[in-house]
Image (cartoon, rainbow, N blue to C red; front, side, top):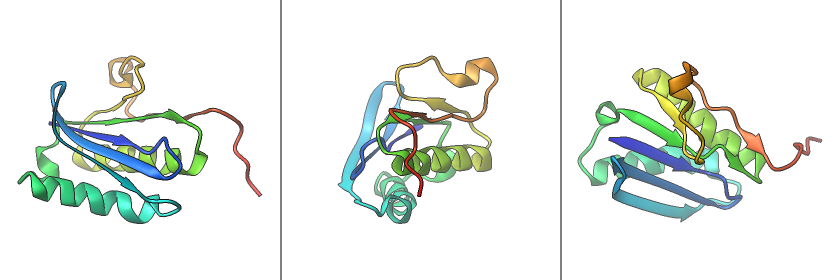
Length: 118
């Protein structure tokens, strides 16, 4: 089973559990400026709703491209951390070839513009 994470939008998060290309369950929710607080909680709720556990995950796919620097960073950090902790592959869900095939075990974000920091 694959966990799909999309935090590419500034206010909306989409998460899903997939079996192959088929969605088992998909959830989208608004989290303006609260992505870090809500993402793991909502992933946990999604797993519980389907009777699954983190240990049932075999792969994590995450959107790596979008316009919100912070939102992307939160989604990618969460995906990479979960994949590392569970010792499962993480891959780009943005249409590019899976980085796992290249031997890369993390997903690197692609921003539409330079970060606006400070």
